[in-house]
Amino acid sequence: MALTDIWFLLIAVLWTGYFVLEGFDFGVGTLLPLVGRTENDRRVAINTIGPVWDGNEVWLLVAGGATFAAFPEWYASLFSGFYLALLIILVALILRGVAFEFRGKIDSDRWRRNWDRAIVFGSLVPALLWGIAFANIVQGVPLDADHRFTGTLLTLLNPYALLGGLATLLLFTLHGAVFLTLKTEGPVRERAVDIARRGGLLAVAVGGAFLVWTELAHGAGWTLAGVVAAAGALLGALWLVNRRDGWAFTLTAVAIVAVTVTLFGSLYPDVLPSTTDPAFSLTTTNAASTPYTLTIMTWVAVVFTPIVLAYQAWTFWVFRKRIRPGDIPPAAGLAARSAATAR
Image 1: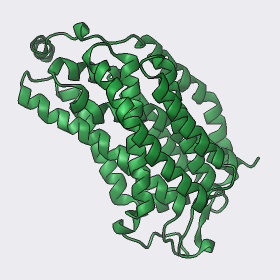
Image 2 (image 1 turned 180 degrees about the vertical axis):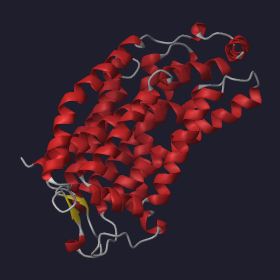
Image 3 (image 1 turned 120 degrees about the vertical axis):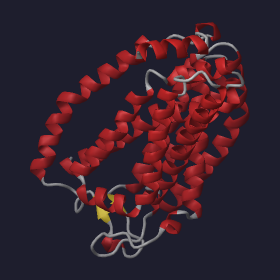
């Protein structure tokens, strides 16, 4: 296997890890108004992802950095063509991170409500736009002979891409709901179970339609297995939720893996197809860095990847326990402690 193929596979793994881990963060944030009807409930939900959300975003940074180093032509065309969409995602992620840090700094209901809206926006928008972006990557965009994007924002908002965005939004929301059933007790868990059961079938239907469209229009034959795996995992998760929460969460993660594998499998050996002329498409060959660069990157990945994985696994182990309503201290006491720390 050539180094270009190895790095295409590694980038696919990085995006898969990002969607599995950040996917439940997006789901919890999107569901915050539905599962958190009181301040205590909202803090229970937020505390399930509080210790891990920033670590999960590292996967995005590494995936972006690996794309820049391994396939600079791909990176350049993506960021020029998808500039506005990626900027909106970046702003949403920054706003969500700020909201997590600032919502408890002032003991005011209005203050917290405004930051809660920021959390919802910062979770829902990326969950939607990542699906739109990857659907366009698989479908292809207008590129000229110099691999420059020649379309507009409206070019990206086509029916296939919009269906992809809705599919990822629903899938991540279901993933987040199942995560809440695994990590909480009390009213938040009860509402999350209800949402997973009611909304899960919609996620199966929309996600299935998107994957079938992907297979029929862009599939490589074997990617049909990804379609079947994703649908089976989601249906299994819906059956197990509130019975075997750990297995249900594992199955929603498997569904996300299957979806991502289907997308990257449909894309290969291209990395960004051109709808203007197939000869203008970016591939793993013409978009790649030099063999020397890829060799150095491979050795770096071999050394540091196990360290990062071990650290993140340790983090999840430390914060593995369920969160109960009684575990949350009064908001006023929290604000007082924050003020005392600032002094």
